[in-house]
Image (cartoon, rainbow, N blue to C red; front, side, top):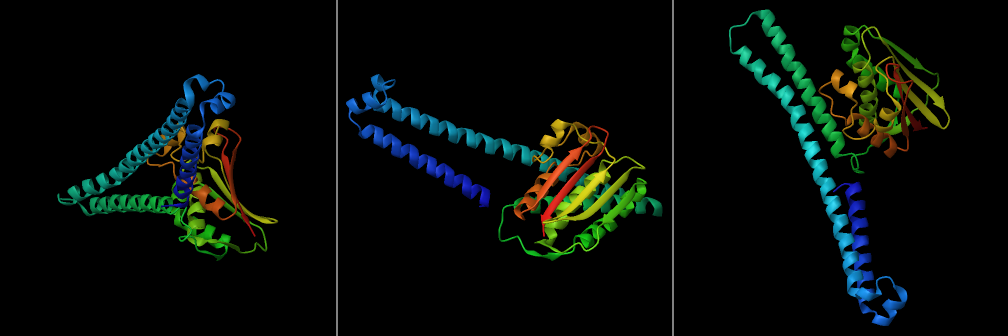
Length: 292
């Protein structure tokens, strides 16, 4: 059970106990006391008051259960769809390999399998981070060099940026101190921002990653010349499963969890993450701030 659910159950337990206590208190009163304290319901007696309280409790529990069921349905629908696409690609590639193929076809098929495998790894990584998002035991802070993390991410996506002719700029201020944070989680959060910038920036666009010291913070800003966002989208961009219509049309395989998880990771480490944009078609800037 994660931290969020523990707090939820504690609040619900406290509410239930309070309702039961109030109900017993009212039922223990005599008729004259109820008439004096609750004149509007006095004709119906303490029993009706108790029923009203219990009805409110049941309604709250039912609503909570409905929200959980909705979340489970939405989550399972998205996950099943995201797994099905790369798995179908692998199955289709395996079928092609059983047929007579040229060497070039084998190379192309192996690339398809490799791409599908990479997609599956990305999905598993997102689910892994999502499942551990509130786990204290899984957080291992250490002193890290932010610049080194950014360099490793850019190296990972170098082929994609070259394929789209995207100009990548890195501006790192001098004497940037180390920050204490879980290295794997920090890499995940930063990678989400850079990957999104690459995905939603058109060919021949530009992406700039800036690292600056703004005491008592270190600021990491990822700015792109991509699709941008409206004010409404900016208000929803960190919600779980949220994706704008244009984002869906560009990247049909997105899950709408990356930014949500990134925000949770950064906030758990006493930092902040924000998004700004000049509007649709005017690019976006995502900024992470971490305490020095």
